[in-house]
Length: 307
Length: 128
Image 1 (spheres, rainbow over the protein chains, first blue to last red):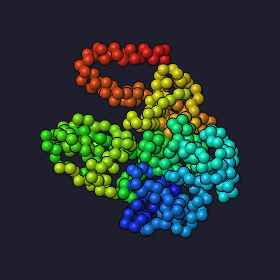
Image 2: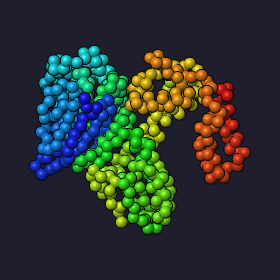
Image 3: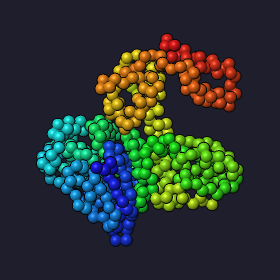
Image 4: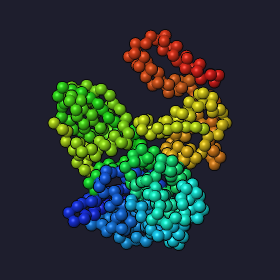
């Protein structure tokens, strides 16, 4: 038995010359809430589709709940609830009909949850899917995914079109009925505040590769932003350095650990340390993926320091 | 129990929870033997990961602020944490040092600092 809900090794998916997923290594622990973060076009949705058999991988391997994505797709789909990015289902069916259609495929389907969630989320159950607003379509996708008794929930852009009240409610339902029951939630999103609330793991993807995969707690406890100043900034390199930003005589260093040691090193090179600050997930995300900061994918510690 | 967490403040959420429970205890809003919500309920209420709440509760229990009855919930512990005075002093020292540093930087007279702390203690009311 594998203790990872999702495990990929060098997973790749190319479309012609476009390397949408390019040697991805993911380790999603069972029972975790994993925030899968990336900018538009970073490869999030392609990864998700490959994990669920909607796309064939070009190279590499992946296991979902211990099952191989090439061999055991039915076993994976039976145990995985999925909210797709584009929120499409059969247009002519009403939510009530979609529920009846779906429940036959899933032995652990919960009709009680359907009733409760349809009511809480205020879903119009008798209106054809095509006529629903984007928000209501999104809700129906969640209803189907959350009620099938899945061990793993893969939610691709889960809050698209939802108002803040429903988003908040959905987070509560996820925590109360699914995370607390030990289910794994794999959340692909760029809503960083949502992720920061409920995730305990994050993976940041850029150009089809993982830039960073860690516990959120690690970011809160060890990642620091060091603001420093000097007439001419010295060249520095450290495996702990994640990103650098510079403007005039100021430098901002994002370090992954041992911030005090790093600051001492800067001081020894003649820099003045202005402050050492804890960072939010957003700052780490921007530090890693922001355009003006060159970073080498997969090796966050080896960023060349701008001259 | 009404708690509020802010995930963009940079302060770890479990520390925010710990801090707010301690504040409620110090202010007398929570009293001995009051029940605290279960990990699951508080996590759902705050929309945070249950592990985060569990960690806050573990720390509070280790510090003697709350006690967990196996299978029977979480309660506010005996009002005076059974710690040695030296241990209490050790835990407070970082806060005191911070206060000393900041007040020196602001050039506040020592007497005014002591007065400030006394005012805060008075503000907590009868629970001294």
